[in-house]
Image 1 (cartoon, rainbow, N blue to C red):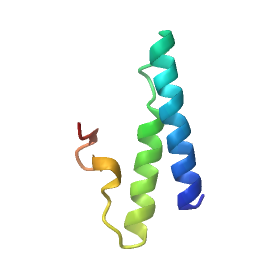
Image 2: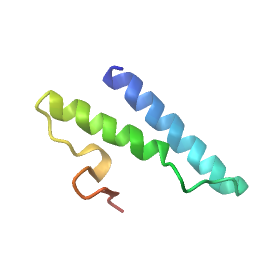
Image 3: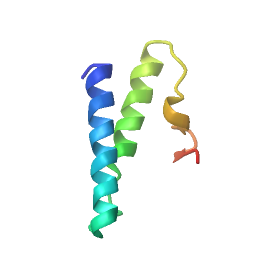
Image 4: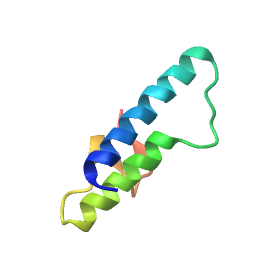
Length: 65
């Protein structure tokens, strides 16, 4: 998957997560947006770029507020 596809799927996952929270159907067992953020960071690291996609730190495992 190239970077544009990863960004697209990450954005869709964020929109779906927001919709799920609004309807009360949110699940806590898997965070698809975080999964894509990790993949984006791995993609960036593999190309010598800083792995700081949207403040997400793979080492810390959390999204900056």
